[in-house]
Length: 95
Image (spheres, one colour):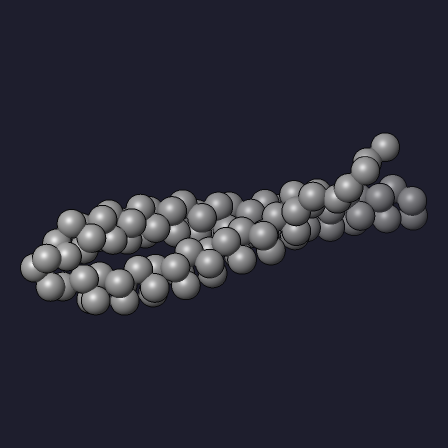
């Protein structure tokens, strides 16, 4: 017995969650890019370097999340193919 549904109960909900995560990463990347521009003055070099590291990490995270999104889409397609073949087989044996 389940108490609560999670974002990963099925492929579609996991894909939706990952899509939102990718969108959030992209929004954060834009904000960080703005901060890098603002920190261009010499006294803010450490701050700029920190934001550049954040930018790098966000970029890597975005790449990984995009790969997860692609994998989930592949799994969804494969599941549909398998289910269609299963239905076709069930119809042919029922006839």
